[in-house]
Length: 116
Image 1 (tube, helix red, strand yellow):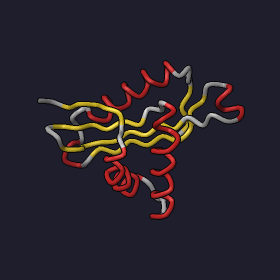
Image 2: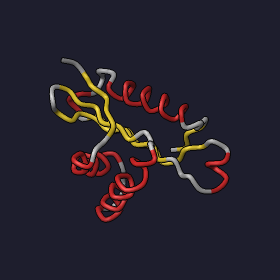
Image 3: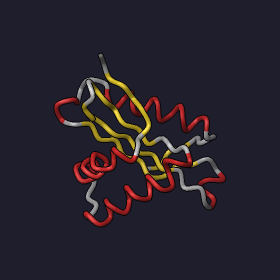
Image 4: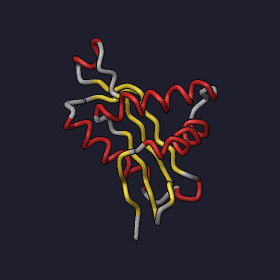
């Protein structure tokens, strides 16, 4: 079947929390707050918040959050960037697929620069 890239939905919240726990030094309460902010603000705004799936299993997530306030947004800069792929699915191009789809969405949003 292959790898499918799709937008995150609310049902993916637990996987996003797991991915942020694995990929960042954030504290648990910050992870929970981040996922809630993504679901409440970034996702409805059309930010590239993406899931990689293979045969129904979630194998990766990519989060780019566009801060729509201030000078960064006016200059076309996205902040907040994280990609996580399960260890057993690495070296198969999953992160590349996630990032390529993210870049397409960011281009549509007129974002020219990403700051992690």
